[in-house]
Length: 108
Image (cartoon, rainbow, N blue to C red; front, side, top):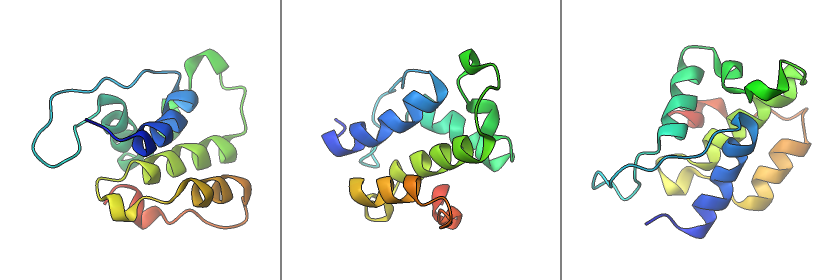
């Protein structure tokens, strides 16, 4: 079962993509695979993360901000719970556009 903090952080990806997280059975690693998370990770790995933005926006969004939301969202659902930022840190990453999101951690 997912913890409340993980679910709250997963909400960031839900809002940005307009998609619901579909959770599949636990694979024994303590964190069940989530098809939304996996889809965003794949898009990021293919340098196409903006393709995950909610289609209902019809491209009417700030690309830098949307990419930042998706990257922070990925960092928040990192497979290693110790690598996930706290809620306050995630909010600071979203608000401080001048500070880079540690991308090396996003899909580790």
